[in-house]
Image (cartoon, rainbow over all chains, first blue to last red):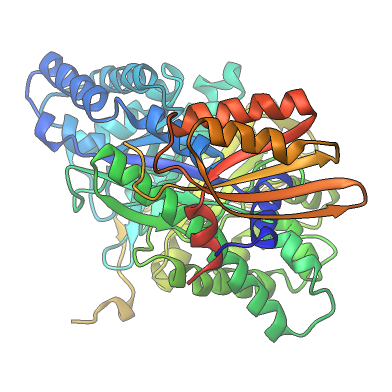
Length: 454
Length: 94
């Protein structure tokens, strides 16, 4: 039987170390809503979402109460809208009407984000996909909770550089379109290489075409719990350190697994995956950078950071896979700058640069995340940064992403406030030299040699 | 729909005072909730108790019981929390 010390340990994690389930994300297929009539399409989308997800928030709250575990976010992901809307949408403005429908449906069921205003263009773009991409700045400016993602590359297809170049322009346009709303459009827009079909985390969640009609995916968290566990093994060797990380990851994941199974059972919707990610928040102590410091670095970004992060990520996965049979999504440690107080501190003192973050993304999920850059950064430079990040994902057969936030009117040294879970960030310097001639070449970068495995 | 496993963990945390266990147990008895196990410690004046109870025959649903005990805790000046047992089972048992 459970003893008092075990009960105390669990409750201490929840009450003092910010243990929570970060998100229950309900994936909904919109394939059966496709219609060549735009009005009909919007109606079907609204009805499907509000019917399928009507109990999501109340069931989430019920589970929270019964186990006294916070479930911070209840969210929805949908089939990439470029696929759903192509038959009906003839202009970017047509796509914006779908974004508004998604926003309305999400608010009706009470979720705080809805992902899937997306296009998968890793090899080429259809006309509909290009229209959707061109509609992103207005779609994000005219909605509150809709998130957008574009997959521009994969290990199997290479990198679609036409899409990369276009995304450089769209990120700049989104920043401009949402500059009065703390540039929040760019915080809701992510560019991927090797995007997973079952990621529960925003802004990159979408319901892949390989998925069932509806599915429950759960994202766990717990950087605070990990850091506290590591304070007890200061000075110990790597074996002890790794054992501690694995055991802690196991415990965190089991809670996620319980919540996922319960949500699935009560909603009558199949359970998909658990995403084992250490996802930080701006709350004090809920930081991946703090874990790296606890492992022995003065600041995240100091020499040794990439090695420490590689080890942390690997041990989290090793502990987590024991705790759940279905692990998927991104699964690793997130290193968003603005959402992690330790990362903010490291960037502010100059320990952490965009280049070091890029190196860190070689060994962790997911990528260059929530990085504020000067507002006058050229679209081609943004495209160049994206291309670098996509190349890391393509060659290493992993998911990488870029969520860059050019801040209009801001310079290096300024601070930008995004609010809430998105936090705040210092504007970081970007390499000033040009990559125009490279980015302006058309076509795609071929798939790497090791992708030919047949 | 609630889970078929009806074991619930009740924890009580706060300053030690006369009659904490009596008051909690009175509420449980009145609502036909069976106590399976009790353990407690006192660390530097702080009272820390855990009860494992079976709610199979309970007259009230889980949510009402949790709310009533929380309110009772406020009256006594301690924090009372009800949680389904599975969260601890999952975390601490393979």
